[in-house]
Image (cartoon, rainbow, N blue to C red; front, side, top):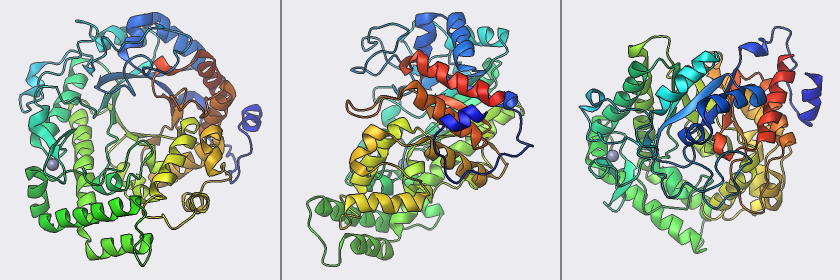
Length: 486
Ligand SMILES: [Zn+2]
């Protein structure tokens, strides 16, 4: 324990370890794995390797998504790790439901045809589940809200943007979309003897999308969502003025576009932005409406799973932006999320976190905080977030964020849920970064895992997918777990 403590590097603000700290043996040591890894390498060999190297006791099997973050081999263009097929799956990667959809669960939705064609008739849950059980490993189905626009039904349930255009994302107030998510998780929980569901929804509301105030996105103030009929109806029920919301977002769009061109308002960028919020409070209200729909789906998914069997566990993935954007952070109450889940997978990806945090600072520094020198903005934001001594802006991508960041964000989540649900920090192993950005060494992975466990986490989830992880990093994670358990 002392060794892992030391290797985690200088951690400031540590709480003293209590003698009553629960034994490491009960912790969830999870890993996210996509279907293709089991297809390429075989269920038994992969599970043996995960147990031996990573001390893994729980598999989060990517069962539904059209996205490459959780499914598929390595992201095209990125170097392959030292295991699995060394060839891109671009030719056959499609995504969808990697289990077998049973039609009776999709009666109330137009989203009926989602079977992933990638691996023929293979049912990945039926394939991996017995192999996991044989080893005493738990298995959760990971389900992610990432679609493609050519899936039958998507066009009918898609969001509508500020300009009235249909988009490729699903409206979370649409009854068919809500019925799809509850139908899917009910199907998985009834059809397979799994341990539960991990639900992913990384979609942001219109305010964040307008500001580009996340890490990976462009500033999309003209394309924010959702202004569809279902959102209009939900607004009416809540006494929200749809027209005022639309006009507010048009004003915000004009402000953002002018700011990007460096057209400074006479009172300055921040004052003008704040004035917009004061004069058009519907901007905030409409953003809250997006969150209400998103959280309603989470609550419905939770209820649907519990209706199948009360002891099935439900977890929610809490996206990365929550750890570096104070505006977003204010909209994510851990205490509230704890009422809808058994555990939260809190993203604390510290390696790619440096690059992402720098992008976030540059994005908000080009609009709302354009009057502030970016280095000073970074320092200021570090204080708001209770970050410790992280790298300077131009060094953040190559330095990554520290294990201390992992520690602090884990403790913040634990304090937020106050024992009402479990906290499983998501640990970054090999998440692709830019050419000149940090590539995590085994030492980095070791330090991040040790920091999360030291902070009192109920376990960890190695992320994002086995098919992008190097074996030495996986071993380093396992070593940190075993040393902690000793
Ligand atoms: Zn809508």
